[in-house]
Length: 220
Image (cartoon, rainbow, N blue to C red):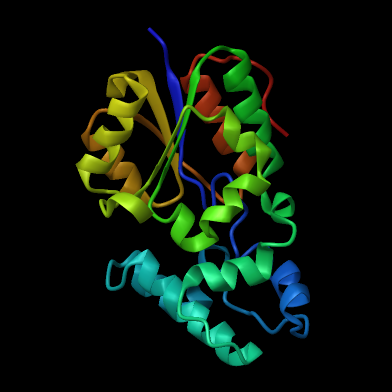
């Protein structure tokens, strides 16, 4: 049976905005250290992140609030997360892609397996022109983005729609996401899962490849 690696994008394929404050500050003309919210890297110091993790606000709500904060700091009138992301990352998006993601994608492709992205907000956060700046996305068989469907993980319909496009049953797929709620949604429809640890990306990708049966040396 053909198998597939199904990846979330933000945090899994790309480094989080928490990890790239230095790049964002340089791009936006802010003093180093201005952006001090750290999300999963320092949850106790980020009450807004804690509210999101407790399902008191959505992930979109979290980033909308951060967008407004940074807009005020920079004198911009942004209304969409994509405006913030494009200003902070749009010039050189390759810098924010995890090297471990590229290696895992290459290994999966070389093994003849399928690749998919299942995202809640790929184009919403990054803008539709972002994809053209990342050539490796051409290796993906499916890019399923709730920006256009309106059906967000962990709704089971998000996963089943991606599976339908892949033409595979859930047990043939390994799903990787950094949010526990999305992992539970994938498990509910029968997919194997890896909850991505943004502090240990190599270990997370190594586990995903192991579940796919690609027993090679661990990623770096």
